Amino acid sequence: MSETNKEQDKTKELDSRLEDLDAKLAHMNQKSEQTNKAQHGTGANASGLAMAWRLGSEFIAGVFVGGAIGWLLDTWFGLAPWGMIIFTLLGFVAGMLNMLRSAGKIAPPGQ
Amino acid sequence: MANDPIQQFQINKIFSLGEVGGVEFAMTNSAIFMIATIVVISGFLIMSTSGRGLVPSRWQSTAELIYELVASTLRNTAGTEGMKFFPLVFSLFTFVLTANLIGMFPYFFTVTSHIIVTLALALLVITTVILYGFMRNGMGFLKLFVPSGVPGAILPFIVIIEILSFLSRPISLSLRLFGNMLAGHIVLKVFAGFVVSLTAAGAAGWLGAIFPFAMTIALTALEFLVACLQAYVFTILTCVYLNDAIHPSH
Image (cartoon, rainbow over all chains, first blue to last red):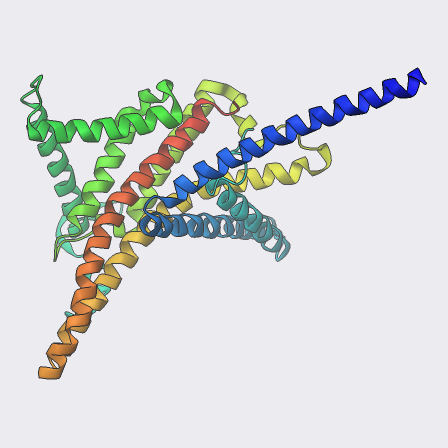
């Protein structure tokens, strides 16, 4: 009997802790949402245009650099067409990474 | 062709400075406007700081405003340690800003609308980052390309992608400034060209020309904004990259 009681107590304690955590998380989410909104709200037009340029150039630069390195490897080592194919794809990935980074969706490098 | 929107970016030789190794060095309109930019910046700063009043004059407080803007940007992104790069960052910011703004005068040449100029500036930044990064951190600088907590199996891919991402920085930095200035000036010229062509078509044309004319005015305002904004974006990204050199893994 006492065993089951103890177990019930334990589950109750866990439940209450879970609830606490939920409340805390909800509070934090709300806070970050508010700050996000505040950041997006300021000068939506001008900063939106700047953001578009920024993301676009990050992405293009990634693909461009990947393609250029692939082409160089092809000409140096006679790997054509594999260097360019693989490195353009990797450049695509790097461009995406840059883009997400500058949008603040992924942690910056070295973390 | 007065209406050709690309013609404004033509580089013209003003006079030749002689040859070095078979390559001609010429004074071009681009070079003259670069010199003009530097003269304007130097003149402005020398004039505005000559008073050194405890209660700043209008000119002095403008100069202080620019100083504070760059210094706080640098401090916020790269920390107080980043302040040793202040001369570089301040020069870049004032150069890009002044070159952009000088380009807003009609018939003036926009130095930053040529990718070779913006790429040179971006390469200067990235070379500084790489050299200082290795000087300060030694091989530890390479940690920038190795994120922690990545499984060993995919680590080589991640490292290659990180290196590509690092190498694309000067490209995107220069492409952004160049693209913004080039596109803005072309669009402005195209709309202004509509006004000219429409007014040639008689009274109805004059009436119709009101719309592109209004658009030109709006775009001019937007271009001023873009000129300042892009100079700031260039500066802030310079600070972010310098921060990577100072703290490759934090």
